[in-house]
Image (tube, rainbow, N blue to C red; front, side):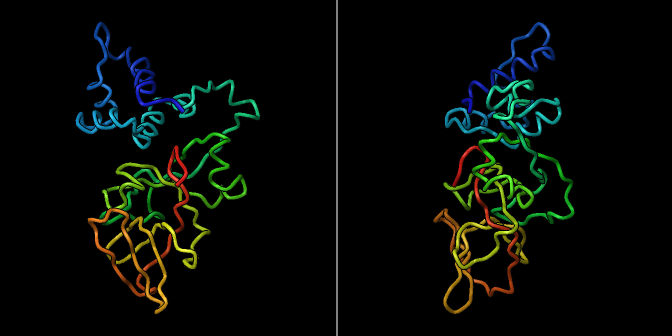
Length: 219
């Protein structure tokens, strides 16, 4: 996968026609991606790729996300070794720290993913169960960060093993580490130690699905 700086240079080339006679600066790309200049500078320093914003940008420009991230030309995608797949993406749904949205009522887009990423999601047979949403807030730092795009397997909703799940409570939609207790209650755990653990009855939560990875990295 390309580095942050390489991706930004690609975007500068794409939008250069909109800045006739002018040099395109990082602040211009921040505006194009709808990212504040402070957050843009932080992402650049950490080499943190803004996946959600890139997906929106590629959708607006009708550009392949594979080309932006991996340099794969549309022609190369015809090759079976570079086959790509589409995943349901609810770009208006955010979960983690605070209230969320009802996935079933949200507009569905699609994420284009390459063959090698399909294996991280469990293989082709699992794609029908996979959906993607955005992360909001810092309650799951450092595991997940604000605006990460995470993949959820809706078929994996058994809490016996524990792990990170997307859940819905009366307070909203969350991404949390969930652990079932011996007394049949459930601990809702944030990886960020600044947040306290919450304990609920099993009937107080709805398990949407297990979070299996984020865009660009398996967790």
